[in-house]
Length: 289
Image 1 (tube, one colour):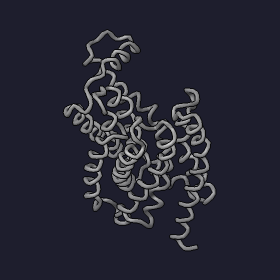
Image 2 (cartoon, helix red, strand yellow; image 1 turned 90 degrees about the horizontal axis):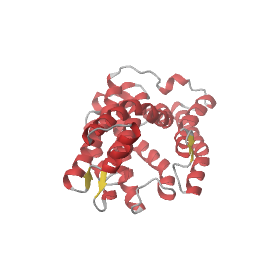
Image 3 (cartoon, one colour; image 1 turned 90 degrees about the vertical axis):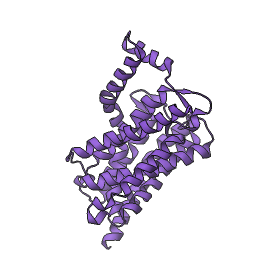
Image 4 (cartoon, helix red, strand yellow; image 1 turned 180 degrees about the vertical axis):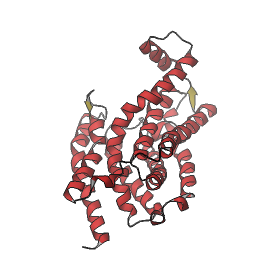
């Protein structure tokens, strides 16, 4: 078996095992109609997100691939900071645009009141928002990272560098966008991983966003050699969108068509960011371009 055929066998083994490990949580999510089902310590979404990691570790074992190939190294640290900051920039830009155009309102006073009550704060709303954002954006990253890491050990730790061995940066990003989108489709179409809008609309917006994100994630993985860039970007993305910006947004009528991962805002901005990173592809190692 030549080198390219061997790598393709690695990829096929990994994808098959990913499907196998994800089938139980897919069933539970679809059967109950609830991605957030289960019990707090172990929910359906957490099990699903660790399927790609289990598949990567099993593939390394079965195919005699050293675990070091997954990219556990942390340095250079600057790429971890870039990974943390990029989702704040693109999600912030999307939501500020949504608030300024009136497609969604700022801010949800009920959400802010619940935050203040939960922390026992008697503070002005603006200060509550600032303090909550700081706490969520630091300590909250630990919880977000615990789930995002499961996917990223598989997607960016294992699969991205394997695909990059016989594909260009652009082709690798497109393949990752397709695979990562398909991974989400069962819960988007048949469970409650959406905002209740038309499924075709949610799927289209989500897919465009995921393809665009993969151009950023692939660039960071190939430039840094670290899977932690993917884990941190993924965790930051989930945290700031799902826990901060979306809850802060008031529904002004059809707001679900613009916010979160299933509306128009994020796909537009992430495509701009993807183009920026695509134009920097010459900075990648020559074999990854």
